[in-house]
Length: 383
Image (cartoon, rainbow, N blue to C red; front, side, top):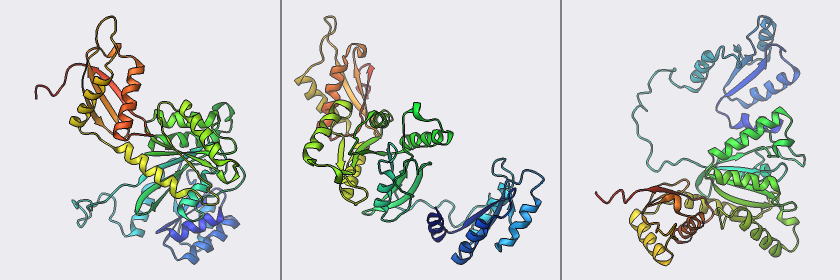
């Protein structure tokens, strides 16, 4: 943790140094203040927990750190936040709050500017999530160790991989709800679930020695239900014997457990040894491309006509079900709407037939597809 703090100071544009006004300055505060002074980084000293009256002594002690006068605030109650914002703006040379930057106002975004791909790395405790993040970054950015539960919060890190911007989110290990009793772990689990919902690609880390236990499958199912692109990383692969046979067994197991997303990418890696990392990221980018793919409406309806000709919908109560038109209103995940005469009469087996046809024809392997039915005719026929 000390090494992580010093690394953060070295990379920072501005350091916010907090002390507890109730406890006063502790020896560790003085020690860390020396590191801040040696770094030469701009710094703002903050005395927190100043909502009471018996904090004057703690605020006065903060002057002894040699970091200037402290800003008194209470983060919990929102006191002094305005002063802190003004100090941050002044330290970074930004205009005051409410003022317009004439040079930047109305300036369009740079051509080609792209948002990073949000990648959430999730799994059970101690399956190697933080080790994978460090392997992708090429440095010890997050704390790792043999003890489960070292990561307690979702940690977001921006980086690049082969010229592409990515945002890695390292999450706390998820256990079954019945086994979570610690309030901090409950909050960490909530952060991990939130990271899945905000991600674009979810990398499910699985321990090769204990693969696809109930919680692994539950996490993967959550990612699919949320419509995220899913990639499965089988970690600690260097400890597995009969690798090809084992990998075939795991793929067969997945076909039954994740039937709603066939052909999900499975990559064997060793995060500690850095093996399989390139293959994993290639799978992530392929899944991301599939997740964003759109099919032009004319091409989609040509495929629909051919599909219906090969295998028409089964009749229900002696009446045919006619599918007249299909469109893709959105991607991320790919979402399709089929207009038919009687949506309630179309069996689930035929919907799976259509979904699998879309996957195989247009390259949606490994990503969830949402196929919705609506009653009506071609909405563009009159146009």
